[in-house]
Length: 445
Image (tube, rainbow, N blue to C red; front, side):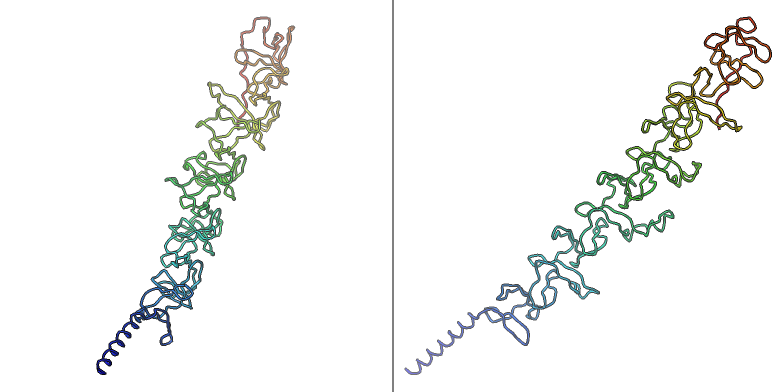
């Protein structure tokens, strides 16, 4: 009976011991100077996450030790206390691939994952992270974005060095006077503005002004062959601030077209869209090429320059020609009576109508042809000028002679004129134009 009781007590002890083993309390414990985690069976946990009493996550490595100051699964990081970093920035001198040559910034999301190979908007700014979770700076994402030293994507204007794989204009373009940097424009999400089609250049309106960008996004200044480079009408001119120039402007002509110009610096006029005013017709100028600017008339040639001096202009709707005189300083078409120096150094009187056209006919008692005053040759006293089949008698001062009783020239010929100065009789006979001369045309340089 006593032996039976001993056996019963032994069996009870085994069950009790078995129950104690299966109900082992899981939790953290220190082992050989390292924290470990034992499960309910008393076994160490390996390569898994476990929470601590503070409800924060910790990681057990392949030895079962709590990891500290190390990366986990290449996207998580535990700090020096073994706690998983989450919900903010952390600067580290190590990456998922190992130690780095310097400290880099990382951003860990609320779930502990570091942002990798993507954009992340943080506190209203965009940041880009590479495959090692490192916050990037400089040109990123196919050189379509630029992140500053703080990692935030640049928006609006930025003066920057071009991406490394872009041709350096400062080296290849002898007319580039910068330090190797260029202006770029980035939209609100940080994306660089570049042409969306195959054009080499395109314009974009920014804050009410037009700017020009090339295929790499660089803002352009100076002459740009916007529609080609065959002639000046294809170009636009952009100031040092990048804005397209409108109105009057003096500039060096485009290098490719420089041989077409007389001077190193020329006047140009650009319309509201930045297009230079040029003659609409090839070859000779016509009245169709006139431009009104601030109620003043200008005439632009095929090079886009306002002409000056005496100009012969063909009528746009006929074979007639007219003469105009443009001031050498402000290039406007002059009106009224003007003294103009001709090729031999003599000064001749001209008269231009209110439209600027040289006057033909009698004005204030004097005879003009295409604006030029017609005078009898010195020593003749009087001379008959044939003006489109009308014969006017003028003296050496260009005054139209009106004499019903008659006047004699230096050769003794007597002329009788009507009240309009047209010759009626010569030496008592009806005048038929004999001895008349053609009007003297304006002198063109």
